[in-house]
Structures are given as C-alpha cells and as structure tokens.
Image (cartoon, rainbow, N blue to C red; front, side, top):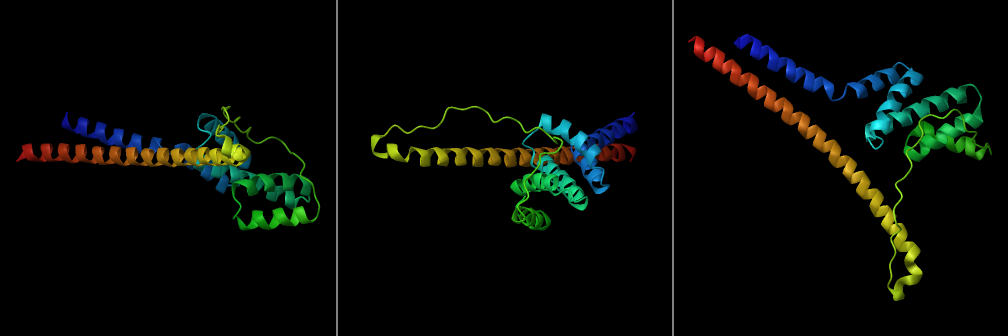
Length: 193
C-alpha cells in the first residue's frame, strides 16, 4: 500500500512537471525541424488561448523569419519583405532580419501580403486619456501618447509577472512533491527498523 502511495505521488509530480511546457517544447522542436506549417498550426491554437505569451510570440516571429527566408531564397522579394517587416517590428535586433529588411527596403521593393499567418487580436477599445486643465490643453496629444506608452508598459509588466508566477508555482509544486516523497520515504524506512 505504501508503495502504491509513493508511486502515485511520483507519477503526479512527473505529470505536473511535464504538463507545463509541453506545447512550447512541441513548437520549438517543430521549428528546429523546419516544419513551420505544422508549428504554426499548433502555435495558432496556443496564441488564441494566450495571445500575450512572450514565448509564443517569439515562436511566431521565428516562423515569420523562416517564411521570409524561404521567399527570399525563391526570389519572391515582395512576399519576403512582408514577413521581414513583421519580424522586424517584433525583433529589431535580429541580424538577418535587420540586414534583409533594409536591403529590400533600399531596393524600393514594396511588401506584398502573403497568406495570413495568425490574425492578431484586436486591441481593447478604451476611452482616451484626456486632461481637462486649460493651461495644458494644447499638450493633450503628448499626454495621450504618454498614457498609451504607460498602458503598454503595464501590459508587458503584467505578462512578465504572470510568467514569474507560473515559474514560482511550478517550482513550489516540485518542491512540495519532493517533500512529500521524502516524507513518505522516511515513514516507510523508519517503520521497517
């Protein structure tokens, strides 16, 4: 009976540990295998459930880069520019994206929209931030922009906080599971003596 309880808790701990990032690992492995279409289909489902997950958005950017490189190799520069443009907006420091984006832009090529990969979520409609003090009424546009920037920063901070909370929850689960296993082991070995 004690062995069954021990096996149950070990299995439960393994399931908890594996369930957290299986989709992320699956997408990452598909991207490494250059199976962008399959990776996109899995990613699209995950993005609909969590559109602000930074890891999923990174994978989406990697898919755009792969599609852009594919079109670039086929000399379909208009379609390549479309994906390089999307990737550049998300990852401006990526060396290949930066180089090819400016190369195609400097050639005077215009982006041609290709098949749609992931429809971006519509932004939430909010009332604009309006300042009603007469002495700063002419600077309202500046303050509106500051308000939007702060909302954007707060959104990113909330995403980071959720990520940290998920990691802490996972760590607590592993720690708790380890303590239970050790407690059971001590109880089992202590009674045998």
